Amino acid sequence: MTEIPNINLNNGVHIPQLGFGTFQIKPADTVEAVQRAFDAGYRHIDTAQMYGNEKEVGQAIAQSALDPTDVFVTTKLNNNKHSRDDALASFDTSLKDLGLERVDLFLIHWPLPAVGNFVDTWRAMEEIYQSGRARSIGVSNFQAHHIGRLLAETTIPPAVNQIELHPYLVQSELHAYNDEHGIATQAWSPIAKGLVLDDPTIVTVALAHNKSAAQVVLRWQIQLGNIVFPKSATPARIQENTAIFDFELDDSEMSMISSLDRGQRTGPDPDTFNYVP
Ligand SMILES: NC(=O)C1=CN([C@@H]2O[C@H](COP(=O)(O)OP(=O)(O)OC[C@H]3O[C@@H](n4cnc5c(N)ncnc54)[C@H](OP(=O)(O)O)[C@@H]3O)[C@@H](O)[C@H]2O)C=CC1
Ligand SMILES: O=C1CO[C@H](CO)[C@@H](O)[C@@H]1O
Image (cartoon, rainbow, N blue to C red; front, top):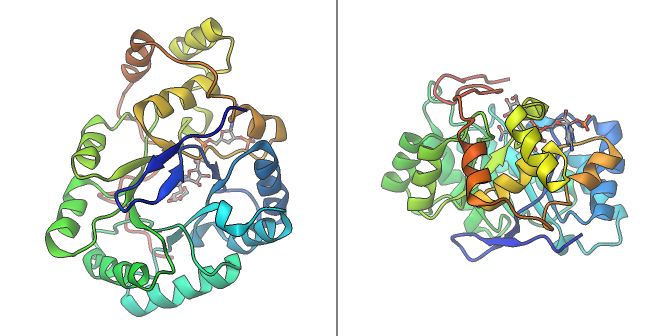
């Protein structure tokens, strides 16, 4: 595998542009899956308090031959932890479960507009950042108007905005907004949970490059400058999803894939999602 490139975040921290997603990997399967990911060359793991597998991600890191500082670890604040005290306490629990002294990136998982306190939650994230125990802080599922409030009312700009983004939900405007404010875009469900893999345009481009549809979509993401962390519990796919740095899509192929946009979400709409467990 060619080396995975890094993206330089707005605070100078480097993040590998390709990582490994762990949503819906059962705790009992997580150590093995993450270990396979390390063996395949991934050095960036995306987890969340919500996924219930932080302990197992931590075990995989501890059991590997890697120095923990060589693995970029992201976790996310759960929706029922938005108050300052809960945010600080749950962050401590995440560190304990992961077995780490610090994480590389800590995100607010959802803005929860009806709950209405994400600006205060962000101030707790700033405290965590200032304590040095999260090398970077960011947001997930924030729309431009949510980020606008953070930029206007708080001190530290988010390093990333992690949003649903794939060929059926290209998010050009939000991506441009993130760029304009120096915020890196992370694409969750980068292959739309598999939904886009039978698309005839993607299949045609894949055939032209002798690559799989998933590899072509991930390559499209990389060339857009997005940070991706496809999830797979299948050993061959974990490997396959890394083989995306030995070919390039031309401008016309990039446009063909981007033009598949149909504003189709596979997950909740951030403006109306207010679920608190
Ligand atoms: N911030 C947020 O709100 C969210 C963040 N995320 C993060 O993003 C990560 C990725 O998103 P996710 O929703 O998992 O969706 P993905 O777009 O990564 O798709 C995962 C699905 O695609 C399958 N798959 C993976 N690779 C291939 C391949 N090469 N060929 C065919 N099928 C493949 C997997 O199957 P199999 O496992 O059986 O191989 C799985 O069913 C999550 O794991 C999580 O870390 C996700 C959702 C929301
Ligand atoms: O991270 C997550 C995994 O996917 C779920 C369903 O799409 C999301 O709600 C959640 O944010």
